[in-house]
Image (cartoon, rainbow, N blue to C red; front, side):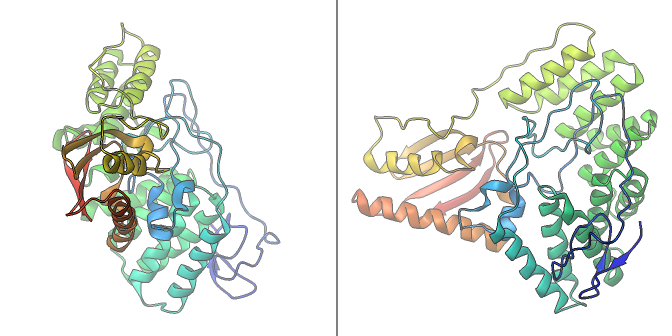
Length: 396
């Protein structure tokens, strides 16, 4: 991949960027070589997420402003016989529903990204600033592919400062994955794993690189290494099923896919895995107990609740991103709520962004208390619906 330099400001740029990430000048006058393209005749495996879902871009840029809805999109669920055209499917906390049409980046987000660029350029030896910039550009590239080259350049700048930086090694691998340059992605994943061999996400992605190179045996070996140490890892089990199917071992493919299905209570994912199982063949799809899907944002509030409880439930259920992921809301006491949420990446938020996100809800709950004349402290617990783990406690 040929390195270019912006004719306006001299910033290093890599194809296929259409503009300079630093000053915004057009680069269309410079010929851009197309990325390598590969296809496969088997089910595209699920990509292990760097952080769960594209909402992470919003956490970096717009947490607390109400504008980060646009970056939370579902990824396509793979089907047998599909190709990898357009890049392999991505996983994200088992987020496997159909993808909507791409949404352009809002001007406010582009402006915020430019601010990150300015901050990094002002401190060329600050690895933290360049690492943050690279992560933001990578997340932006999931919506606007023209940011890929800028992300790659920023990650490589980090590696110039810290050659063994794990975030940058993985980031470069991920960008090459998106460019469909799987051999280069594999190189950086292997460098990463030499330093951090127990990372289940990266080893799963390495297995996928081998699978795309039709090295099925090596892919299976990598996936098996993951599930041996991480027996609850959905993506690795799903991809293992894909690999066995590509190998022609229907029985083991169905066994791995059925195991993957058992690792989530999400009804939609169960239905999708059943579709893949039916396409793989070898018998009737195995069914497992499922839970009801999360209510939509229009789910009515239970009439028996107090006015304050109804106000709080409406507050969370109508939230653009969190609302559709709420399985149920429990009220142990009149002023204490437990929100059981599916596929919501609380742990992925940077700490400052997480606090802004929670502060917005503290303010709104405080307003609900005042309106409904509720005294004392109100508490809301955010619970992962699949693992039952406490993600956060909010008091107001």
